[in-house]
Figure 1 (cartoon, helix red, strand yellow):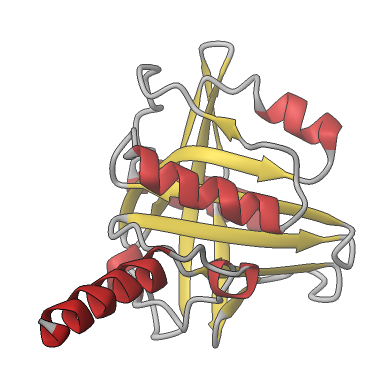
Figure 2: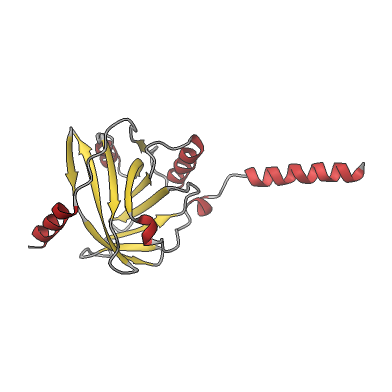
Length: 197
């Protein structure tokens, strides 16, 4: 009888420990250098947290957004193209980045003004990007996924992470709004070479 009572008490203790909320340090744990092959392809923007309220209000005006990572050229460099649908128009830009451990830098930018990295998430097909601008005075925290809509517990985790960054509640994208078509590789190369000229 005592053995049964001890087993029940132990099971209760384990369930309480497992359900304990994560600390902000655990929620904002940097992702070790990501596998660039896993990054490759298209990710839909699910939600965005921004610390600067005027930018958050502008961000809320987007109909949809996505980011496409391209096949990397080395183990530490790759490029990606964000696309934004705003007022039924698609806007594209392309960035080259270099991974440095758990963070990345944008090629050709002042590294003291912008730091960026990936943050760990329990969502298996999600990607979290945290950007610190103006020496950390402004932050952007983007949640991407291969899916357009996440489960409630996945969104709750993200909202808790946004709260840990002391940001206002995030803007959540409408999953019914159409994404921009992926920019084809020829157009991307042409825009990159014209930008370099």
